[in-house]
Length: 183
Picture 1: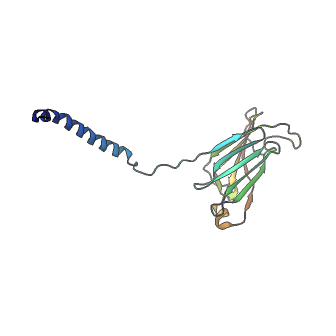
Picture 2: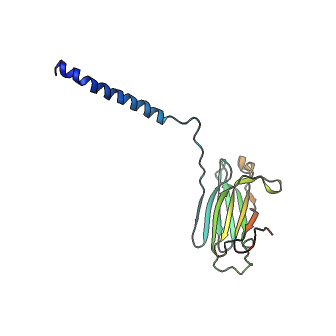
Picture 3: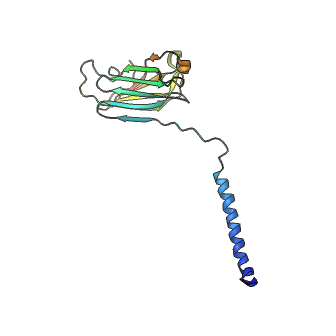
């Protein structure tokens, strides 16, 4: 290599080095975290088959509940795991058939949907509610009932005995003639 070829190649090398430095600066600024922490993401799930529907729903900012609807009996049951014992510290049970307009003993091959949703309200009757509600829909009529989930984080603290609670009927929507009324 001659001195002349080195002099000619210098501008190209300088451009390559400058481009690499710009790439490093831009890349490092893009990989820095934003001004604040990343937002928390809460996921809710729902699934059904011929006999059961299941869903998960956030109860508060640290725990979620798991709920099962038995189509044959109409029993909506669920629970919240205790963070101290890894056992269900709070359990829920409620029969949805009456709310959906079914007469006892007259239910034949019902099909339901069970979907969780977020809610930001205080409790009914002075009690605190979870940050989610459960919607149960009769797939044949579209009648939908919203259920509140009573919640007190102290009930699962310290390995206390399991607590059984009843879901709270909040409202009923009847899309085929009739407004939303709770009996």
